[in-house]
Length: 248
Image (cartoon, rainbow, N blue to C red; front, side, top):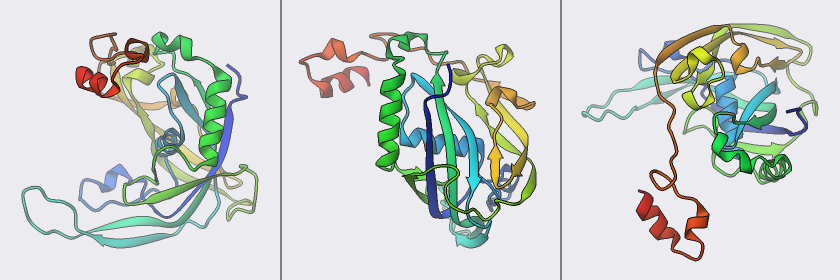
């Protein structure tokens, strides 16, 4: 499928925390300097998502200067105690994102829902309304806000600069997203050598990342009619609350 179904938007907020996994082991999180592919995909899915489609992040433009701020946080300890940790957040962030959707080939049962114009029109309207669900910039405490905006609009802080951010996490390939045959039924972590050219990060597609590691077996969930889900047609004129009770 070609890419006429592109959306562009601006996402911004006071703080962001795209956690570097290396900083998690000590209990004091530190953010990457730029958002990961997976974080931007999660933001896009919060704007609009259906199991029929999968979002591909094409580009991200860094608009504001990369600044950090440390905060004292009291993490929840379920066994009691009152520790203090320091989390390092990105401060005053804004990103311009360009993404497009493709069909989820692992959900052949949803072929009847592959109406490109329908999904594109809904996605575009959801961008205008700020998303269907709450937007978070990497962590629950970092509230984000979405507005429709062209990727090239405005002046960015790094428009005339090229930077390298080294090896960082690209994202996680879940079993229902696996394209490579050897990763079917697996959960895989992807890494890449992050580069910014003229203030824009051009993300490789998930299957193009060469640094990959299979974490564990994770079979794809199978959806079986009347076993673990039911369609609306079976409940036409019926009780939707009864439907939820029957399924759950």
